[in-house]
Image (cartoon, rainbow, N blue to C red; front, side, top):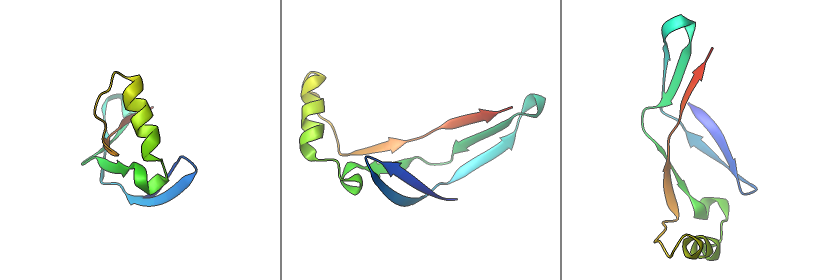
Length: 75
């Protein structure tokens, strides 16, 4: 399913592979079949921001890419 992800003032077209299912009590469940990889470089996030964030949380190593997943339930 095509979608637009807007983040940090930039927009990028992405493809979502989702699963939608009707569950109990006529609820609708929607989830990713596979996560979307979000790259900070695609959204103009400076590497310095990631370095500062890493330092703030104790010097952990952070990647400029992250896997994003979600599960939604609608009544």
